[in-house]
Image 1 (spheres, rainbow, N blue to C red):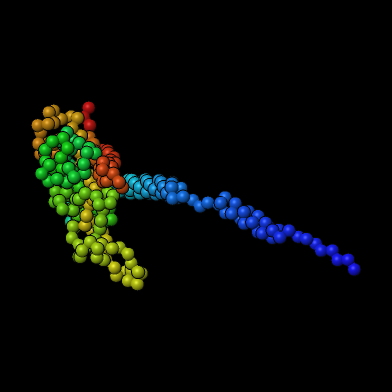
Image 2 (cartoon, helix red, strand yellow):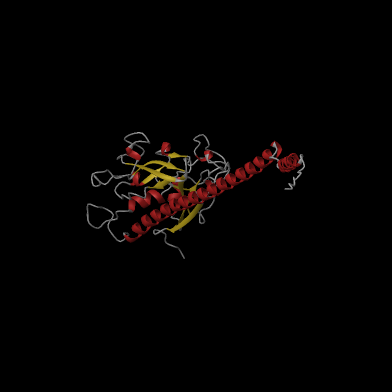
Length: 305
């Protein structure tokens, strides 16, 4: 019996092992991680994108808030204009009635006192148009500075500024319906948010039954005592909003030298009411200003031929 012996190389197994190790080492050497420089670069790019995105979001929010404040300011201006027109139209419709309530308590000139408070210069809140302050966007504080009484731009108290209580037009109480800046100087303040009227449930103008944060300035109601809750109709603060009344002086000689009593002796053809606002929008150092002028013709004017 012949036996054949197969002779395998002794080093075959060792060679295969070495080849396998060399392949694994080559794969390992081809894999390498990110360096610290690459990580820092990626983090920097991500941070820049994040900061720019947040900045754009904040800018858009400021624009939206500024637009909302402008809309609220226009609403306040329109409310004052409509209230003044209502007083004028009411007085105009009552001119054929008696002036004394005792003569006819049901039909008398109920809105006469309100209109006279707006139209009179000496005893009311009207002005010579050449003497009122110019409207400037330099600063809002200048209009509320009691010491700023001279110059082209002066305070609103010198111009006998006022606002109309749009929540309660009471012809029997002209002083609380048309709130004068001279008579209630502390009420007229710079706008903390936007031009607005803040109301309280007190019965006296400029008085609150508590602090600003109390329920006396909070008009929210749970509904449980809806009919017992006092109405918020009394002005407590007037922020960034005022009205200046002027009269026609086209037929007056040397209007600069004439006093208030002299102006009242000559009937004007019309009256102008300057409704002005001033406040600081979000992220703004320059004040925002919006104004309008409404012209109402004098019912008492008789044009001479």
